[in-house]
Image (cartoon, rainbow over all chains, first blue to last red; front, side, top):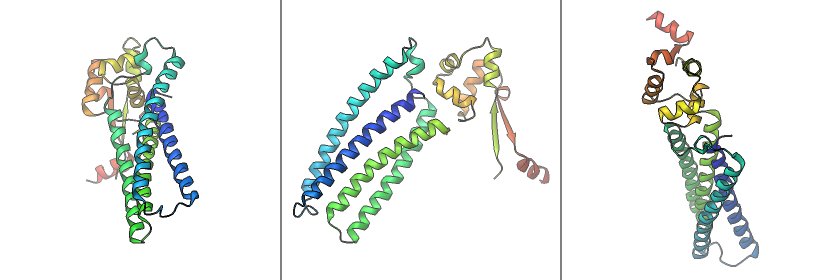
Length: 153
Length: 81
C-alpha cells in the first residue's frame, strides 16, 4: 500500500470517528426527550461547532500519529521513496475527481434537507441532515480517493 | 464510441537504459514513483507534458515510448470512410 493510500485511510478513520461521535451524541440528546429539541437551533448549532473543532483537533492528532507510525514501520533511509513530498498531476487529478464526487453527495444531502422543510419537519432535522451530508461528503471524498489510487484514474 | 488503447514501453526502456529504477525515472520527470508505476501498469494516462518528459528522459521520440492502438471496431469504421 502506498503512502497516499495510507494517509487517506488515516483521514477516513478520523472522519469516521468524528461523525460517529456526533451521531452518538445527537442520539443521546434525542433519548433524553428534552422538550422543544426540534426547534432549539442554538443547541444544535453549538453542538455542530464543537464537533467541527473536535474534528480538527482529532484529525491533527491522528495525522501526527500516522506520520510517527509510518516512519517507524518503514525504516526506509531514502524517505522520499515512501513519503512523497510533491503532489504531481495524478495526485491533483485524483483530488479533483474525489472532490467532485463529494460535492454530489453534499448536494443530494442538501436537497434532502430542503425536502424535510417542505414536509414541515422540525428545522433541527434540516440542520442535522445538512451537517451530516457535509460529513458524509467528506468521507465519500476519501473513499473516492482510495478507489482512484487503487483502480487507476 | 471506438475504444482507444494507449500502451507504453517504459518498463523495457528502463531496463535497456542501465536498469534505472522507477524512483530514478520519477525524479527525472518530477513525479512520484507511484505515478510511474501507474503509467507502466496502464492505470494512468499521463498528460502530454509528462509523456514528453518521460520520452526525453530516455532520449527517445514520443512514438517509441507511447503507442496508440485502435480497436478493430475503430479500424473497421476507418476503412469504410
